[in-house]
Image 1 (cartoon, rainbow over the protein chains, first blue to last red):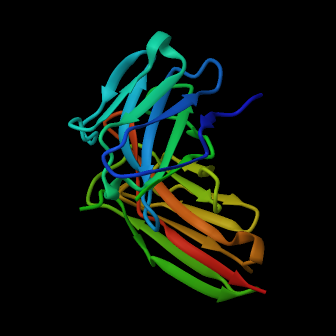
Image 2: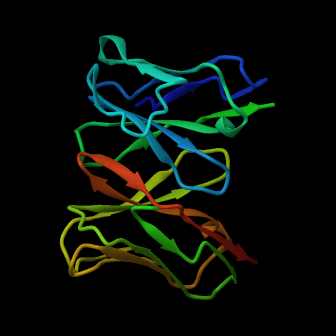
Length: 114
Length: 109
């Protein structure tokens, strides 16, 4: 069974530029999460989707971050404009059910903002 | 303020030693999970505990969920270099999973 796929693995941009990350969850997983993990810290939830609907985006900085999950499968997370403090690993995870069960993570997309 | 507080933040021990790491909260969780994360990879689930007072064993790892379902511990017996990694606890909160900051464990040969 294929795991959670993310791209790109690495991205370096200058502040005020924009960037987009893509995630393809495990087939059949209804719930998709985007987490931000700053170096030395645990993952911080940015947004959670159930199919193509948003369940929780309370910690998403909506002035610069946006995410969508069209058709309830793939998802894209965008940052525009990027700030230095956005440097982090962006992890995508999926799970079969809402709220319970194992989260399966991708390898992450490492963003460096210069 | 973190919903889940993990301690210690860093732990460096010699191969063969025992260790315990902790995950504490003032909130009650319906379930709590432990993940391990290695550099350059995403976290991987080790165990889920659901019932207060529950103890689960996974080879040399013993997980305990507090009676009040507010805290958990992970005990490793005879640690090996392969146990090196970031240990994260995660709790179900309003239908989503919130993570602690993790304990970074280094086991020296």
